[in-house]
Length: 448
Image (cartoon, rainbow, N blue to C red; front, side, top):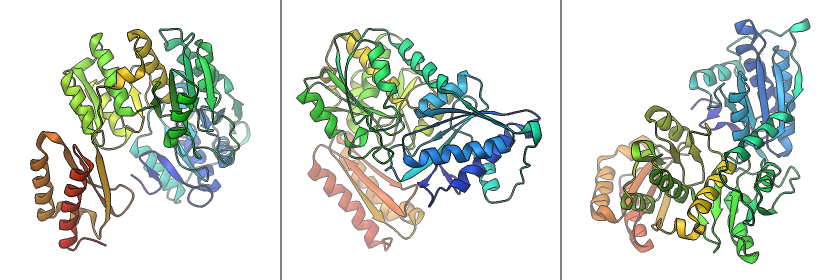
């Protein structure tokens, strides 16, 4: 990770951590780097979510891009995966998404995508940061070389058409609830499900710039749970602010997580001979219950660091076809280069309709193990993590759990804390073993 950009873009409170000036500079650099530097005019596509500040950052990015000679194509309010898709299929030099995903409205972020619709490589990100810090000079475009802005709402419509084309079934007479989080999917998701014939019931679809993710969407799934049960719906889907993740609610009001999705669709692929390598890709935070369920049906798995970026890298390098996170980022690499919440919802609908089974039955084999996670503020993350006595305590717990659970101790990527997590057959066992390890961390003097 760089000085400004983390694993998912440059993110922070608008005009405090991430400012208008930052956005202008990012546009200035990208317009030159992909254009005048190579003796051509760059084409850059931009999307945004519904945050109040997204409009400001859109204008700032466009200002920087055209000043460096690039043409900025504006998709307006749209989802992160739609920008990734359009960047790739319409031959843009790069794509930009303005969103802080599931964060509150006062935060925002700038996500950069390469010409393949993938997250921008680290080398280019570091050059952007060098320009922000004044270490690189970028010339202004002049006269006819100055760029222009282009209304590109057609790109969003093209993406909607693409999603509709992926469905193998009509959704006629299926009652579907959608919680669009007052975010980027507020128009797109309903349009897709309407076109496929579903009876669509939508909540949290009145964005005002300040209510994105507020008590709604995938981070507050309890509202969709109640909505599905109260209205006797067949299924419900909740998205986050930029719709790159999706959580599901079955007809009984139970939550179907990203781990459930990996099991349900991974098994569906295996049954049809489509699960290359016979593997799904998870992160180290997937629940132990997922692995137990996959073992029972003979599906193998790989574990990556936390972050859909690492899941995608694994899939590219190994040829694995499906992967994701418990939080709802699911990557279907045949169809997308990033997690796509609406695509995920369509794929879950496909399995439900193909197997003619309710979602509750499809998800039932994944029985989540109780989990306790505690954060310990420490003086030095590496010293605490690598302490021989701490490692011995972790090994002792792992041995005691055997195949009935697991322990995970890892450093936070953003805070001075060590996260100690145990999954086991009861909350009491989880608490006992987490506290044992934390006591060793305290006894060795690592607590800040």
